[in-house]
Length: 417
Ligand code: SAJ
Image 1 (cartoon, protein in one colour):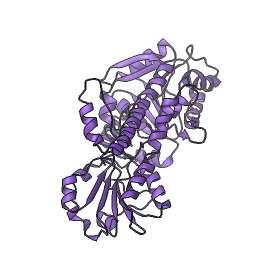
Image 2 (cartoon, rainbow, N blue to C red):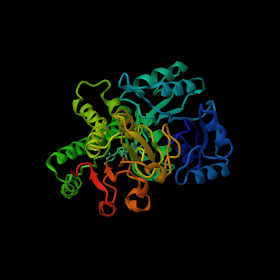
Image 3 (cartoon, protein in one colour):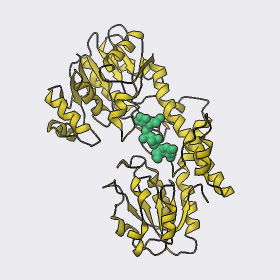
Image 4 (tube, protein in one colour):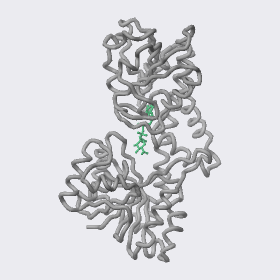
């Protein structure tokens, strides 16, 4: 049994803390946000996902979890704070990782283990983390141990993936790796892959970069398919029957807090990264492409109103972080369009979210930006009456074209024109 201080009680830190607490450890959840700490103290989750509340109830019942604002003495410190993207510099902004490590320094004792779960550029453990923690006068690898254990669970299915996914564990030396592996084996059912800290840092970034580059390729294929007038979705489906091909899906761009950001952490100090940067550029330019296609559909309509269906960064979640919908809406407004928004998951956002009927009232075109399941089953005959013109542009290939055609909609899909 270890006493673990988990710094950062967000989407990753909190479920990780609760998994440790439910599996034999004493856990203290630390967060600088008072609202998060107060909510946890009241026995409630500050955000919801499948299974989270039950896990919190279990940890509290075992008397194995408490939340507070400042770190305290423990055997293990686990850092799970955000790593924002500094868009001006195109670099990882490590300010939260640095301040979390600084918070650990006064409490660090001989034999302690410090684990960084936050996404960090290669060599961060070996260089910056070491430098900060050694301010304690203790020596890394002699007195205390450090490893990187990146989280790779997918939002929407976090708990299942935290338990069943394989884990990468990279220590700054073998003892750090082994101590970390012993700890995680208390709840991880997937395989533990042991490596060095710099390799682990690189692996996490490589995985998300692979996805970004693959999506960029799909987006480029979609634009080529539009030029040739073929259906890229069907073409991808058939190409993927090849045993060594797995092309991802085109769309309005890449959102979320990882895939659109992590590639920059890999390129920030590299000389050979033109493919990665080009892929970022392709994915970031997709809102412009969507607007171009929508403009073609709306040719001849004066002062059009459009309705965006879905602003979450991906389907069936309420998360809008770095959503490509925002750039599309801003570009559409610059074009002079009036934009209204419907999203069955997102309740509050920087733009007002409307009920379905109000959102389509007076609209000349629906633009589907998110692959929410609701859009797959939708029959527009239930709500389209107030629309001024019956156009729909689908960037996710989710709507049932036959049903929308029956309702007399002019339907266009990205990569299918
Ligand atoms: N997207 C496409 N086409 C696709 C797949 C995704 O356009 O074929 C778009 C999505 O709509 C979304 C964006 O990409 O806007 C990212 O979504 P995602 O489902 O690819 O990934 P995230 O950001 O939700 O989670 C990723 C995952 N990484 C990988 O699958 C390699 C997850 O396992 C990581 O834990 C997470 O990043 C993270 O925290 O790093």
